[in-house]
Length: 296
Image 1 (cartoon, rainbow, N blue to C red):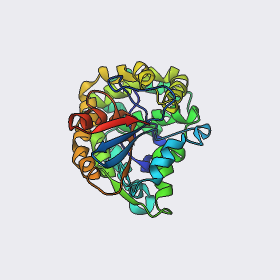
Image 2 (image 1 turned 120 degrees about the vertical axis):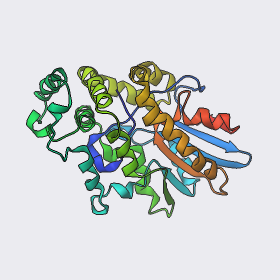
Image 3 (image 1 turned 45 degrees about the vertical axis):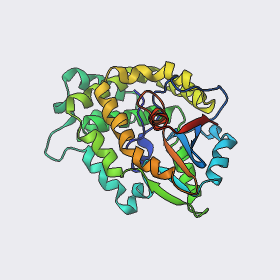
């Protein structure tokens, strides 16, 4: 199951994010994964991020840079400064570890633990090394290994790329939420749900590299229909997780996006691709408010 990069940059090599998309919003192959949103004369740009990319993803479609240059503020899921170890980002990792003497193997079924052990045989990790981790942390670790094997690098992600450009260009950086709140979305899930998501990841690992490459191609082409075809089923098995990780957060962000559309200077908004599309996606929510959206 592909998830959004909910945990931010303090997980660095732990996440790749591309999620489902939907054909409910019209798209044209060859466009960017970027939308212009209008409220009267006011404009906002909304980009679907891949939080880990390959070297050959650059240079980006020029539409991204044009939108960024035209904007006065960069708005992302979090202010990536929170991910800096010097700002306490690494301290948040402690939430992914048991502090009460429990272990991963005691938290999941024997079958799940055995599945993880078999998968780890082809990685640098051993089961003993992950015993202090909670199931959601193990899931993200396995995702990270898969993305690394596919050549995806979080330091090349779309959000990181524009974050690094914002400072030198004097653009304000705004976070829609905090890094801690992203961690809490996983950490507060019941362990049964964490294990279910982990098992979904285990089931996908054998075909992960080819799937990631196909998703990358679809994202580069702005092909939301292809992404839907490949990934929509991931969350169909766990609608509760979709509600927690996507729908609720989208609703929480909408007031800030409304504010962006009242600014005299555009905002350039970068969030995970899963948040943008689908019946509970930001595009649908923006359209329901009467805003015009146009893929670039």
